[in-house]
Length: 247
Image 1 (tube, helix red, strand yellow):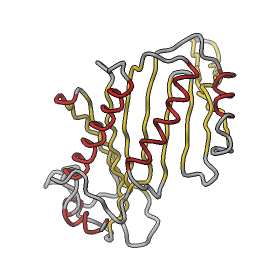
Image 2: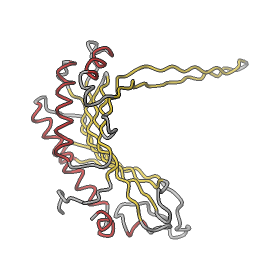
Image 3: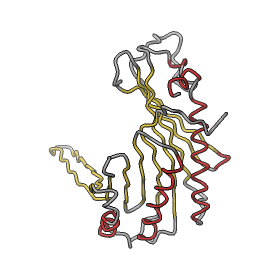
Image 4: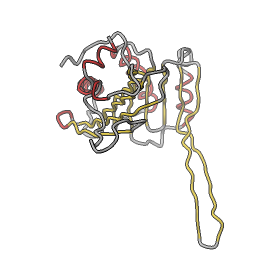
């Protein structure tokens, strides 16, 4: 299997590089805001990132009550063409590349450059989790469609049931013991942008959350391993009929 296969019409809608760090009291939102503003020439739009939580209380004989609040986790910086998003949070750092995706090397190099700035600013010396995630939207020129014609990994419906599916969501977790990682595959049908087509999302998330090296060079070598394995998994999930759609 050629894990470096390049497609002229790759179905990637979003590529993500993510690093999580141990919580540190020295990191505050002002620090992250200043860091985001330092790259505002390349990422002119800066938005806050919030997490919302809610609580409902139900007691016998008393009317139910509900409350909600939100906390700010960091900032999201967006490039002028809205194709690159950099998230700097209190507990981690994420870079996303939206379609059209070019190739791994420039995406990786940009993520590493922005990570170096983040790591230096927050004084991070412990990374707790790293991940590479690729979201693929595959438009199949049939509706309805026989999924097994395009996918080697797809839901199996009992022969005693109707075979026509209007939708599905499937998640598979696959330990990758040889590289100390875990792969999470999400596959689902989404609304198609074209008539007489079926659009399927194949979301591949590879992460490692233990025995991470402290050395930066070794850490980014781990990203290379995750990326190569992502390619292998993608190729293992599709058939030649799907490949013809991308060439």
